[in-house]
Amino acid sequence: MADRDRPIIALYPGSFDPITLGHLDIIERASKVFDRTLVAVLQNPKKEPLFTVEERIHLIEQSTAHLPQVEAITFSGLTVECAHQRGATVLIRGLRVMSDFEFELQMAHTNKTLSEEIETVFLATRNEYSFLSSSLVKEIARFGGPVDRLVPEPVIAEIQQRCFPNLPPA
Image (cartoon, rainbow, N blue to C red; front, side):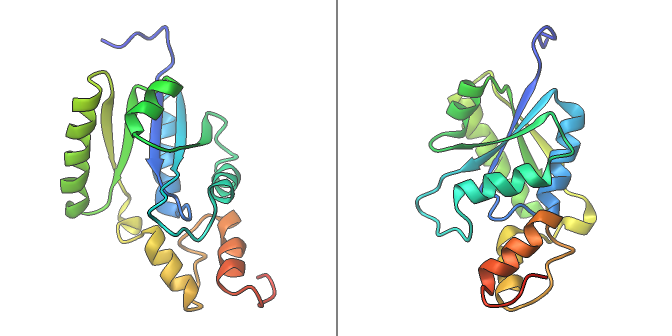
């Protein structure tokens, strides 16, 4: 049984390059369930991101400004170690399609092996975001397509400026 004398802190790890409306949906819903939600931006040296870690943190902070119990942080290494360091006992994972579930279930079992006290909670993405990924957003933006229905307001101009720096802001 959970010790309700302590707040339940959830950690939502990911690249968030950039944060999408699907991510924001999961964050908003997690913030209704848990006392605090930490959106943890992974520093992954194997990826070439569109935005720096600092820029992603800033975009998450702007996109979640209406959620006082949400905090954007950064980490490298194992997710469960980040959770321990921040006092989180729950990992949030979003599910879009069945293939996500297979991967995420494997990760949940791995994390449970690494840390018995950390639980993984899956939140199914709303239908309108089930196709959405940061990679898809970047691809659309690189070809000049509209991203206004895919990312939070603070991200729109930033992603357009990053993909087309010579265009005037929208």
